[in-house]
Image (cartoon, rainbow, N blue to C red; front, side, top):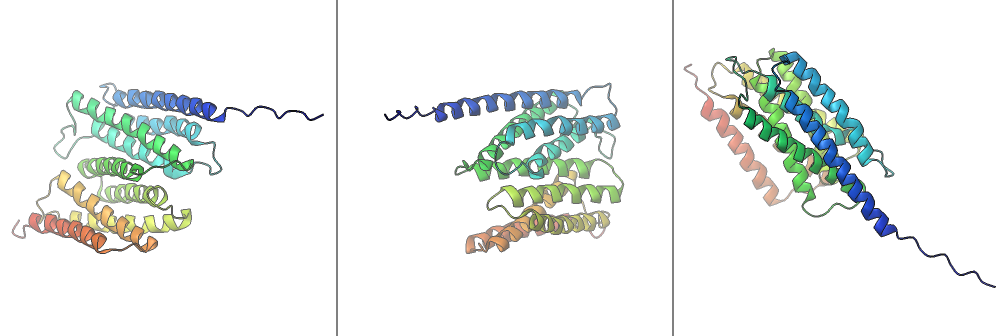
Length: 281
């Protein structure tokens, strides 16, 4: 006598419930991080304490991301935690940092609240896209969203570093570090994933180039009429160009449009440098 086969399990429904639960958890983590970021603006905290709290934000976000992203054959690597680290640097600098004149970088609370809301939305969206990529469910357009989020947090981190009156060596070290982190994530997440060791070497190369550009700008600062925003934009263009050149070299994907795109960005970068040069100062 044959035994009838057991009924199949309704795996799609279970998967849908699992994904819905994950999204709710991710939203909760984003709200918690936003609450911590808003505390940066408290008058009870000094500038040094704000940076310590920013480190605490990264510590809180890391297990939340790990719990959300794990569950695949590939264990979540360090590149998935880079956006929140760059975001924490940006928020801490904007909340507690002062410019060279001693004025707060962002004095208005509503502006900082808006930036915090953008950070929270970016955290949720970036983690969600990483989740889909790890499970092979990445769709068309996801890479552009990842790129936009990375550019936003990197631009914010650059703006903070070039505005706050650090020691020059410390400023260059910060620029190298955040450039390295952004480049490493880009090589690992955006487009075809590059192996970790090669991504590490390539990120070091991009970090060195951008750091040397920053050193040249700082060394020639007496001849340049540059505000902090333009300085940050120049560093961002330098990162974008060098990161892109490495990416297209590895993928062997140079085309006429790619050459025109990066040539235009390089021309604009040169224009910013030349237009700010005033030898008679």
